[in-house]
Amino acid sequence: MDKLQQIKLPIAKEFEEFKSLFDASLQSSNPLLGEVLTYIKQRNGKMMRPILALLMAKLSGEINPSTLHAALSLELLHTASLVHDDVVDESDKRRGQSSVNAIYNNKVSVLVGDYMLATSLKHSAMTGKIRVVELVACLGQNLSEGEIIQLTNINASEFSEEVYYDVIRKKTAALFTASAEAGAVSVQASDEMVENARLFGEMIGIAFQIKDDIFDYYSSDEIGKPTGNDMHEGKLTLPALYVLNTLGDTEMCQLALRIKALEASDAEIARFIEYVKQNGGIEYARRAMAEYRDKALALLPVASDAAIKEALTAYIDYVIEREK
Image (tube, rainbow, N blue to C red):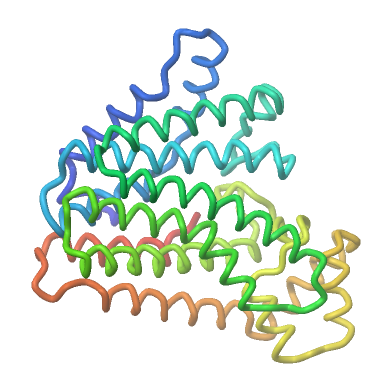
C-alpha cells in the first residue's frame, strides 16, 4: 500500500462519494462550457485538500453531507483560482499539462473560472452552515490578496522572509487552512478542535509550499515546470532569501534584484540557482519544512482515533516527501 492509499484508507467510502459529487458539479448542457469543464475534471490532481477536510471531519465526528459540500466548495474555488492564475501568469502549462487558456483562450478561461466560483458558492450554501460560507469567502479574499502582495513585492529592494511567509499564508496555506477548518466545522466540533484544525492546516500548507519552492531548484518533467520557473517570474523563495540575507554578497544581491525586475538572463538565473544550492539554501528550507511538520503533528489530540491520526501523520509526511 502506497502512502496516498494509506492516507485515504479511513475515509475511502466518503472520498468516493466526494468524487462523485465533484464530477457531477463539473457538468453543463452548454457544449463549450461542458467541454472545458470535462477537460478540467480529467486533469484534476490528487485532491489533497478535500482529503484533509474529510480526515479532519472524521477526527472530530462523523462525515455528513455538509462535509462533502464544504470540501467540494473549497476544491472548486481552488480549481477556479488555478484557471485564473494561468491567465494572469500567461502560463501555457499546469503540472505538465496544457493550461485551459493554452487550449482555448483567456476569455473562455476567465468565464469558466467565474462559473466555477459561482458553483463553489452554491455548494458552500448547501452545507447549511454560514461559517462555511464565510470560510469560502475569506479564502477567496486571501488568495487574491496573496497574489497582489506577491506582485508588489517584486518591486521591493529587500529580501524579506516575513513577506514570503505572508504570501504563503494567504495563498497555498490558506487552502489547507480553510479545508481543515471547514472539515471540523461541518461536524460541529468544539471551538478548540476547530482552532487546532485551522492551525494544523496552516502548518501543512506552509510545508507544502516550501517543498514546491525546493522543486524549483531541480529540473523535472514530472513536476511540470522547468528549473528556475519562479525566478523567471521574478519570485525569490525561501532558499534564496536565506542565502542572500545570511551571506550579504553584494554581487549576488544585485543579481537577485535583476531577477525580481525580470532583467536577468537564463544564464544568470542558472548561476544564481547554483549559488543558492551551494550555500545551504536547500538545507535551510528543508529544516524549516521539518519544523512545520513537527508543529502540525503536535496539534493532533492525544486521545484521537488511531487510524485517523495515522492517516494524518502519513498526510504530512507525504507533503514533505513527495517527488512532484
